[in-house]
Image (cartoon, rainbow, N blue to C red; front, side, top):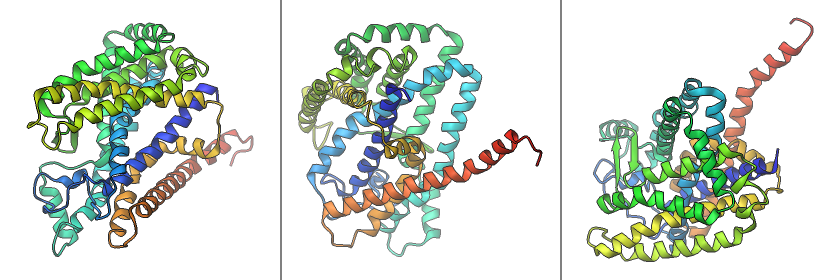
Length: 402
């Protein structure tokens, strides 16, 4: 692979590990709400915190807050990087069909077959005399089905379909975005400012209207009401850079972004600290805080989001010569691991509730177990499904009929 491809592959592998670490930490946050309500009583806190352990550590709150600021937007950005090339190669119809198969179908299957077992432990700790029949009855009677981490998929599909629809009616927009990426190639700071500004235009009014924490849901389709505009902005930022070239401009291994990775680390830390400080002024009740505190926290979020994302990309490009089998395998299996990991995370957290271990030990066991089980199941499934294809390919290439 070329250096840019190695860098992005490594970044994808690192991101999936961070995702697992994020979800593994949720049971041990100092701010996690105690599970004092029944499973079928609103506000259904178990959707965000299926398991809440008695052992907590405030440091994990800081870690999860930082990842919440930059990680999800980065996943939309990474998808956008490869979307433009795929759309140009396949055309609108084939691209849409491929996205429905690659994103839409896994989302539906995950909602039907992975979400119920993922949240069954949440039911067990909130219900006296639990039974699977009662769980299923309560699950079906909920006002919406929680998709768990797979909520990301339907929103990702929606943005991909938006890109395809724009290409169908105005194919020239891909070239115009590529010119924007060429301009940004030597102006990373201005690109950062532009990305933060566009994100703020969509985010700030929504955050002030709904708060940064409010979610809405219809059936299995849930979204954080203030963030769709940021996800769209980051997707098309990646779309623009990917359309210009994965080895050019900001994505060049020796480019200005990679050379100044340490400055982007400082920017990420400073902007996150600013956001965290202003957000603390709005706690515990967003609507009870002063208007100036809410405005400041809302304005601070998009720059922190953009700076954190640019640091991750810069760091990956800086280490573009680093190649390892482990990172290659993590990257290749990242999508499958994302789909299945939450089942392992929640059940491991549930199994350790009464263990008496310290928080660090529980977190280490959950993260290691989730990584091993989700990675191993992904590799095994890949080999299982690849087997018939390999056999067919060998038969097709054989000069002797069989």
